Image 1 (cartoon, one colour):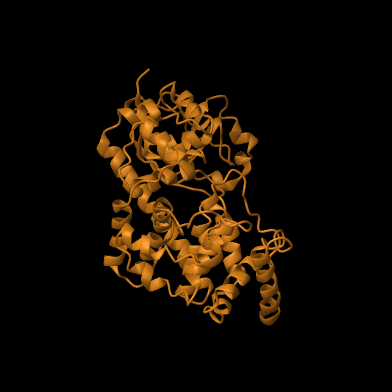
Image 2 (image 1 turned 45 degrees about the vertical axis):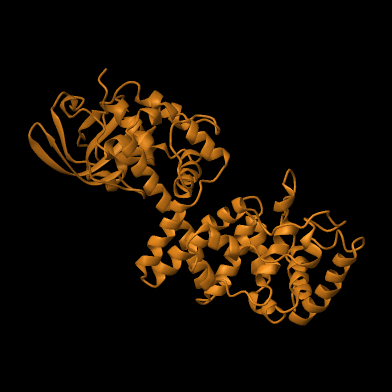
Amino acid sequence: MEKLMQYVWQHRLWRQNDMRTVDGRRLQVIDPGRLNNDAGPDFFNAKISIDGRIWAGNVEIHFRASDWHRHGHSSDRAYDSVVLHVVDRDDAVIRRSDGQIIPQMRMPCSPDLHLKYGALVGAADRDIPCAGAIKDMPSVYITDWMSTLGFERLYAKAERLEEMRRRFGGDWEQAVYISVARCLGFSVNSEPFERLAMSMPLMFIGKHADSQLAVEALLFGQSGLLDRYAGSDPYAARLSREYAFLSHKFGLRAPEALGWKMARMRPPNLPYRRIAVLASLIRSGFRMTSRLLAVRTIDDAMALFSPAMDGYWSTRYTFGPEGNRTLKAMSRESVTIMTINCVAPLMMAYGTVHGDTHLTDRASALLHSLAPENNRIVSMFGEAGIKVPDAFTSQALVELRRNYCEKRKCLYCRIGHRMLADSARRRE
């Protein structure tokens, strides 16, 4: 509850005319101060007026006034600079270490504020407790928040890619290779795919990039997915023998338990199929950075992420019997997701590093040109009244759900802020 009270104080969500100290003196907040996230008083450098006299110092906030004593502040000289104690329950007089009484006030907020806050942060994972408020908010307010969230997610992905590049000594190609591998895993197998790529350096694959067998052997061997089929499928057995030779040559060790997920997965998304696609992208040399940066439309991305699936994988999703039809590398929907999660972040990262604003602008423009994702999060917010015209907005909604709703950071969400601000200022 103190967190909510700090929020109300920080954002001035009170009725100024109602503010008095517990002993009846008129109080005016000139400056609420700066929120302190470390040890010490909650707000530094505040400025208040009590009956016309100006006080400058710190502010401490507690649910109960008696918490001042329970927390040991009465004997802590770090709290001697507190000029105001803000509480919900006025159940004790508080003093500085020298015995001087500190002015105290009760937070003058609407009585339903706590209930509203509890309803927001206590809702079940699948609920949108602010759904009613979304429908009532001006569209320009929602649009502005979606714009902020969309860029927030795009910058976060770009920074992740840039961190990977720095990790590999500034090598864009290695970072992009790992990023492409991660994206091929989509949300379900993104971590195993990233770990696979990290364990199989691009420079080793490059030495045998002209051999489809060698590239697939290296990737499948490192993935740990060959053992199950090597005894029953001739091609898997061949890959296993090739991997034994190459792993000895390069001193490779397959990582333990990558954690592949297979349950309830559509055949085109199985890791076997996705590894085969990655192998086809690498065949004859990866060299993807410049090609990704040149993408301008979804058709460009389709051409880039649709390598020819020759031979064994032209008719198979996994090891085993041959299928009865030729298969595409990826569907248009899958390529759209790859563009969202791989191409646009690379443009933003590369443009930021090189000071190329045209490229960073193209990153967001590309997302605005793509169809929105079709997932539960997008459907949920769509039903609540948010229009989702493009992938930039669908990404904004994923950011909202993952980093605000699920983490119960309603205080930091503009929709939650609007709801709580209205409740805080509503008269009894």
